[in-house]
Amino acid sequence: MSAEGLFDTRKLQRERNKLAKRLMRQVGRAIIDYNMIEDGDRVMVCVSGGKDSYGLLDILLQLRERAPISFDIVAVNLDQKQPGFPADVLPRYLESRGVPYHIETQDTYSVVKRLIPEGKTMCSLCSRLRRGILYRVATELKATKIALGHHRDDIVATFLLNLFYGGIMKAMPPKLVSDDGRHVVIRPLAYVKEADLIAYAEWKQFPIIPCSLCGSQENLKRREVSHLMAEWDARYPGRVDNIFNSLGRIKTSHMLDHGLYDFAGLKPTGYADPDGDRAFDPVDFEFGHAAQPAGPRAELVNFDQEDDLDLADDDFLQPGVGPGHDPALSPGHPATADTARVSPIAVPDRSSE
Image 1 (cartoon, rainbow, N blue to C red):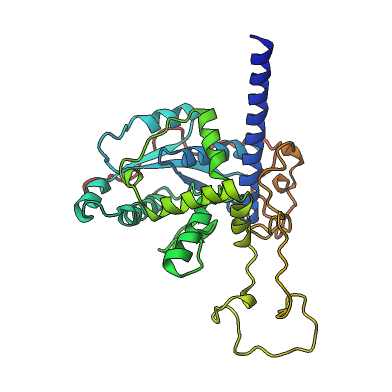
Image 2 (image 1 turned 90 degrees about the vertical axis):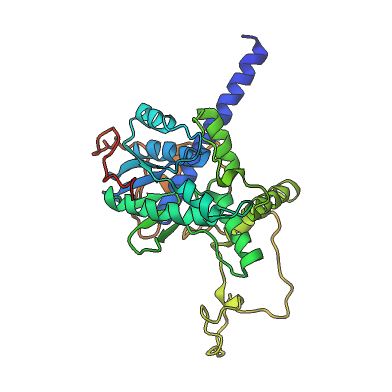
């Protein structure tokens, strides 16, 4: 190999090392910030065959090796009987990784195609059907947490979609109780940029399975918002980061929702309030300075400047750090064996229902 080729190889390896550290750091931080995973949890990781869910599963498997707690991971895929779906790809990959898994087969594809007129958006119905099935499977597998692969860009896009088209300030929470009230849903990739997941998938060569249902529909509002965010990233670096970080710095006293703040009962206290309204002062924007992150930690989420930190130096991966301290992850901890067997997991056959 030439000197130039050797230099390029080393440079690529350095970039990949930085990427891996950044992903581990951000996922570990999100888990601790929101207490996503606790000792004894059985985490059902929903794996679609796309880059995000592959990345989520891979990162969680690595972080579990250094976790100070014991938790199990089971991968679940919903085979929606889309034409041409390669049913052998995910089982082969999961078995190669030694991950317990369950493939749930339900023909939601035919249901969606039958009920949604040609040319109309299928996402809403498909999502509702998929959600109900996965909740049922989580109950049957006795999963205590359901992990989804939504990332930072998904959260910002959802916020903008609700803002632009729904007239409501609502995003995609990193942790919530399911609408049936029976499950806790977590999004460990909440702090991760989509661009990093794309690079990680290319590096790891995940066997990506394209979606031929909603993934093939053009002119979706979410796609339009994604293009807008990409333009902002190119023309105004840091804008999307600040939108994301602002979701964790909400001043209810400076919004208009009287259900969240008692405007009607507001009275002067006679005491100075640093958060009080300075009605006659100009707004002071600190350009170039990222806002407070979503989450209870008192530091800034900076997505680009900590690449050279070693994992062992990241305090959010250490036990004893963070409010309430119930740490999910820590480097250097012995690997935790999966109590479930490494093979497909049997649940009742409901394919005929």
